Image (cartoon, rainbow, N blue to C red):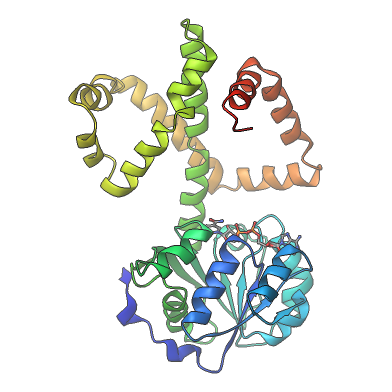
Length: 325
Ligand code: NAI
């Protein structure tokens, strides 16, 4: 189900103070949009460059705990990795029955890294748009889509609050889709895990194996910017319709010629099913916790191993030559 501007009633927010916790990519844009919509917005931030920016933008800016005490509706917009600690230290001790806690990602609630008390509403307003775009598309009068969900309805009014907030951040102009914390989490992680980076890496490696230089392979597959253009075609025209903007030779090659045979397609889908299973059963989230607790040692080691390979070194050389590094 979709919700649009006419479904949202901003009077549901009358007399309420919205607290933005984390004035970063999403926080700043959502705060500015809500203020423009007439909502009373304050910012909770640790003292850093974001807090300076928030003051510069004219928001009442308080330490996290003070803002949590003052706000009726809490927007959790700090990075997902630090959110459980920020919630436990600053938000939970200051929550009042009837408050609303809103997340821009389902991750921490779905994996129970944050379990809010039962007498508050817990909702999700997850923009399908990068932070700057959340502001720019609203200023341009277009808006952006979001996935929305109610996880816990203590007040009996969570749905109305959710759609009013979706309208206030400017998302119901384009429309918001009813979802769930689980669906948003799985789809978002899958987008990151499904293998785009490694597909490009393998493409370069095989081209090099077959005698193409690193420079030519990297330029061809991404450094030229052609991929960005094609990505924009995907966005503007759709995965299949954008093929009309390519030569017929290219369209035939992409759509029909390299279509994997049945066995290869099954193997590739089986791999992707495994990727989703590890997201769904929490294997990834547990592993990520473990890596962070171990001071990111495993992550740093994998990065160092890859960086020592010729590909990464050749990429650095090329990007220096292109004046981009
Ligand atoms: P961000 O990386 O821009 O960080 C926001 C702010 O958090 C920073 O400005 C900083 O002041 C504060 N912060 C960082 N570490 C902190 C700590 N240890 N203690 C207290 N404050 C700290 O965050 P971003 O990218 O806006 O993400 C916020 C939420 O929005 C996340 O849940 C993310 O999944 C979600 N989201 C992000 C999107 C994006 O395009 N960036 C898109 C859709 C959802």
